[in-house]
Length: 114
Image (cartoon, rainbow, N blue to C red; front, side, top):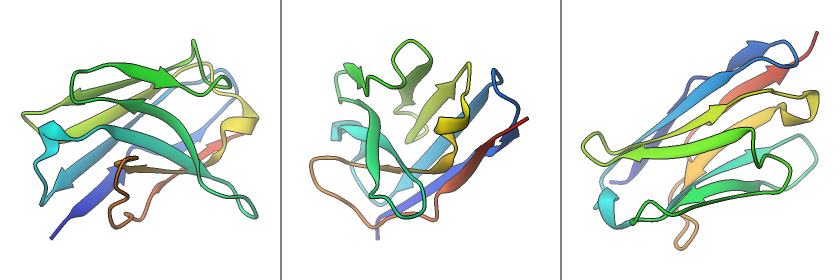
């Protein structure tokens, strides 16, 4: 049974940093491209960043230069280092496999306000 568990969210001031984690189980993790999504109320979930099984990465324009995605296949985990956070980054963040959407986890809330 596939399970995705996100953690690491919190409340920070603009300019602050957070590191999100997503632990996956029940899948051959190292073969999957994995991604981070975010969702704000009233809007669809949007892909923020992804990392391939060959560690290639890409980012939405809105987060380029501020966010960094990484993965540790020995831990079946991906990470999202978020720096210089802005109020518009506030959302619930989820992880998933963009090529074959898996059951969604509960997400982790990120709040950015002064």
